[in-house]
Amino acid sequence: MIIVKILSQCQPALNFFHIFDYTSGMKTFIKTLRGLASLFFYFCNTLFWCTPLFLLTILKFLIPLTGFRLWCSRTLSTLATAWVGANTINQRLFSKTSLAVQGLQEFSLEKKYLVLANHQSWVDILVLQRIFHRKIPFLKFFLKKELIWFPILGQAWWALDFPFMKRYSTQFLKKKPHLKGKDLEITRKACEKFKTSPISIMNFVEGTRFTPEKHKRQQSPYQSLLKSKAGGVGYVLTSMGDQLNAILDVTIVYPGGIKNFWSFVCGDIQEIKVRVKHMPVTADLLGDYTSDRSFRARFHNWLNDLWKEKDRSIQDMLV
Image (cartoon, rainbow, N blue to C red; front, top):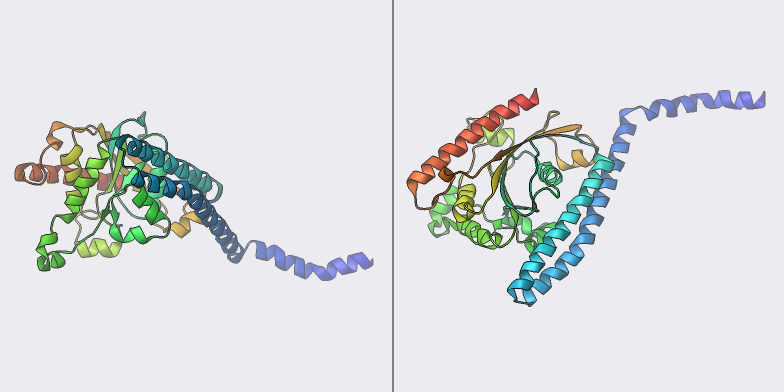
């Protein structure tokens, strides 16, 4: 009887905890814990692989032997590939986001690819690294110069020979016209390095992440894309188009709405759709983007057509 009385007195408290288990507060708490655990995993994984990466980078600069430096570059890419692999395990453990990918086929780790994609979130980078992991050479991006100061990762990107580019506004270039074409010069130098080994060059053609504000400010003719920026892609094709084995056109869509990296690590992104289109590097894509006006005009038309098709694909994928 005493036990029954005690339990009956505790019942309101038990009911309270039962209700609390299913409140949004508890769900938010669990998601936050999941996000923090995932971030800790990312941090430890990055720190673990960056230590040998930085040491090898120092040796690469201290020993000026071409063969040794080529070996270092390949080994650095191997370390970066292992880092991506561990990140993928992290995502499967904590984020549990479903990736619906179309168009993946037999690629090669010994070839050269130019990867073009739309850009909506920092999550895009993780998605691209995951779907192409050990299918094509390690992806290298053109990054904003400011990102070199991003803790650990910025220095790792520098060690891996990622090209850092300084963006100049039209008004700034009017004041300092001597800086016009500086980004293209950086692209040219980066492409010279990329000629020596298998490579996947990644380019977010819009040049920045899509937001409704940017879309409105640009008066973009597309429904779900910003205007394409042809310069970087054009110069890559000019510098090493004859060496590229294929162009991979990637379309990334978030059916539940575009969300940030924190939402991703907390498991708030249920599904991401990706469509990969394999395109050959045809003769009409080879030319001198810098000085041949006729080629530049044709290339702009080709890229605009590609962007129109991508915009239609996004609408189809959202259905």
